Length: 400
Ligand code: SR1
Ligand code: MG
Image (cartoon, rainbow, N blue to C red; front, side):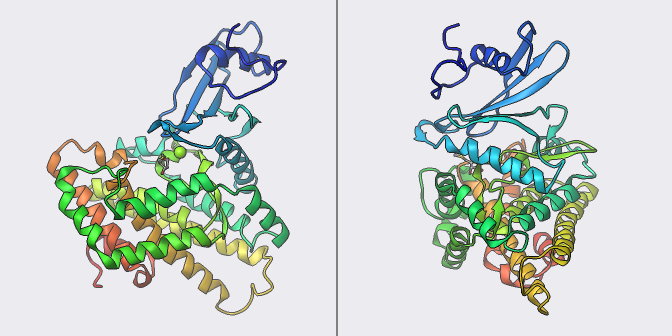
């Protein structure tokens, strides 16, 4: 068939379509030749195609393919295909360290920029579920466990220095890091073309562009992001990168993975729960505060337990060493959470939590709150020393 990518031809990159992905899957033996397969492109992210294939017996797989450009913008924004390999290798590494919390990878092909993996369609994207008001009792503790296991396990505490540096080279991801450097740490603080905000926020945004204390603090956070190669971070750990139901949590999409600051991943989780906090009231809001506390306490306890049982550092038992490390991670977490709050409100890629609020006044009020909280977390991160203090800051109870 014309356009089918055959194993016998010399392989070169070609975008899959519904018509070409089915014979490809059969040729690789994931389905029988005579299977009747339904295939659908289900990708709703900013960058890639995601095909779901299912036969009549209910067997299903996901074939994810990176495009040579950013789907959200179009062909004018070229983007490395190597991100597919980064994603697949990060899924495998994180799967070894946090079994059950990431999808299983069946196959990868660097040239075609594809990852074939476990179908998680029985689960819901956490952002969608949370926006719809669903409750996920395991989400917070599973995320805390995932964070602690993947981040400790790829850090200098969890790995021999040779292995850590080997992984640091393997997961060099400059193009995807540059997206983050621009979209999170630079563009929202200047009158950049990529920014995207509602006219009703113009005054708030103008203040941000002139706020020297904020600009200094974000410059410092960007420098931490650029230089602090602590662990193999996921790099884009918002609630759209998490599949969930009442019993299971799976973290997907680590194409932005690289050796970066541990607090970057933790901060993104905290910020994306805060978006939910801003949209809720009463018990539903209190639930999100409890979840934020649970993410951090599970992360901290699991990180500490690993520190005490397997630690490569000769200084592991030096009094106060653990305390200084965890305090730095927390401080970075607070600052990076603030950066995520601001970029998702006025930068290129928004969140449904805020954008889907139908009432104009409520939506603008929630966005203003995200901006002001973001500023506080970024500028005052050194003074917000516990998760309780962070929540007090969010509710306006903290006295600076
Ligand atoms: C051009 S990519 C825009 C955003 O989408 C991804 O999910 C990352 O969050 C990135 O910053
Ligand atoms: Mg993504």
